[in-house]
Structure formats: structure tokens, C-alpha cells
Image (cartoon, rainbow over all chains, first blue to last red; front, side, top):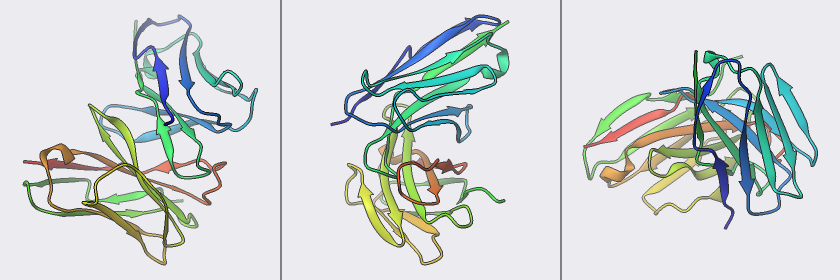
Length: 111
Length: 114
């Protein structure tokens, strides 16, 4: 059974610092998604990574995918308070519609 | 372009009742999938529909069912509600179920079972 594990699960950062969230998964897949969720809200799509070596960047966030290592990373650069949220990675191995989510990483950025 | 619309947004039911949740996908999207989110179990896949056919189903009891209509709108039904069914139910749509498409999530229906 596919397992998706994120670490850390909780992350408290200071503004201006850098950090990385890791997403490991147990079965071969070349489709990985990152989502953001604010409290009480739905999931906002951040990145879709579709091949080995894929790297995407948006603002202070950069995501990468290493399918051989079954690892994706979400790197945060110079964190700001507005990035405080829960971040989920999700893997799709069934070609559409069925995502297996990680536990989520709750990020808190403090001044 | 309107996003994924879920109704109702909030509802309260009692044990033993049943509930129907509705999801209208983004115009032109033909794939609809449903997820349950709880603090204990996280985000779990319920089922996915494409062109009125269920393509994938998660590990949920038969009390959870769904369907998709010809206009791609989808409904899910939970019968004989249990306390553990209290959750945020999220619907997502995508143009095609190819796996290379981004999923767009609705705001969710928050169900409380008393």
C-alpha cells in the first residue's frame, strides 16, 4: 500500500529564515502535488511535478521531485508570516483523481 | 471562471440519519473526486468519477456512495451516519483523469454528526 510521509509535521520558523519540508513516498510515481491549506479553508494548489528532476518555483517556495529517491522537497526561502499554513504533498499512482496525501506539515512563521 | 462549488457548506445531522452532498465542478471539467478530511485520519480518498463512471474507490464502507450526472455534477451520500463521519468533505475536479492534470478543490462541506 502506498504511504506518503512528510517531515517535519510541525515547523515553527522565524521570518527571514530558510527551511525545507520533505515528502517521502513508498511506491514508484512520477506525479506529485503540493497543496496549501489555511485553517478552515480548502486546498490551494501550489505545484504539480510530473517528472524526475522537475523543479518549480513560485515566490518564496520551490518544489522539486526525485522519483528515484521517491522524494519531493518544498523549500521555503526567507519565510514571511503569510506563509503560515499547513502544507500537504500528495502522490498520484492511479493516473488520475486518486491522490494519496501526506499527513501535512503545519508551518508557523513568527516575527 | 467559477471554481468548484460544494453545497451545503455546513450541516449538522444526528446518528442514523443520511446526508447528501453536492459538487459542481469547474465548467468543462469531467472528472470529480471526493476526499474526507479529519484531524485523526487526515485526507483520505473516497471515490472518483469520470463521465458518470466510478473509476476509483477508496477504503470506505458501503454507507458511502456517490454518483455523477451527465453534466459532470456529482453527489455523495452517506447513510446511517456515525459520529466518526464528522469531517470536512472536499470535492475536486480536473479536466481529464490522466494524472497529469491539476486538481482544483472546492471549499468543502463540513459535516457534524451528533
